[in-house]
Image (tube, one colour):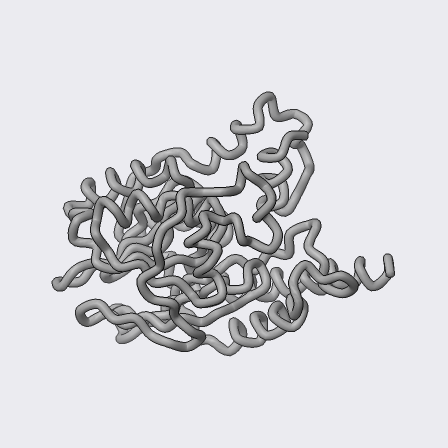
Length: 291
């Protein structure tokens, strides 16, 4: 198994079936296929690939783009923004869920093309500026590096970013990376304001160490705090950096069938957080038994 395949396997959270992959890039490419962009709700639009998510939040005073995918995803994002009738040049803020290759790889190209300011959580900012080389887990893996870019603002937990009438609150939900950031905002629904949470990944990668010789100091406490924070957040619309996390394909099929907007689904948020915490507890138990 080569380096890229190992890294991709970790991000998937499973090694099952990788031996059958003919090429190490096949799985990566399967995450990064173009899909038709669409409006999710109110001013939030989907502009990412089939699994690697990216979101455009539009305002009359310029737009916000969340996540840049792989380096190769930048072209998909650019085309998707154009298909929806918007311009990349009108993006004024670039924000990020976390500093991994599949969510930060396209940010440098998108920042250069748009001229947008780059806002990253303080604990992940060095990894962004180094192109992933300072990441605690993937930093020594060349295949996981990405084009570096300068961070214009290092944001702290619970700080806010504003663009026009839109306000996003950064919740640093660390563990997957030290600065993994879940973003929260409100949109207008038919019955009034709705809470939206763009959850950062809560995955405990297979080789992460939580107890003895921890992957980074405080990682267990960070995951514990993350689940407590996520459980405390109100959420009507659940979105995430991978579309499979919030079952986008299923929701699009339900939307096509008609009826209420399936993206308004607070139950799926609670299920995701509970399932992620359960996987964390299982990982922790395995380490405790091994030690």
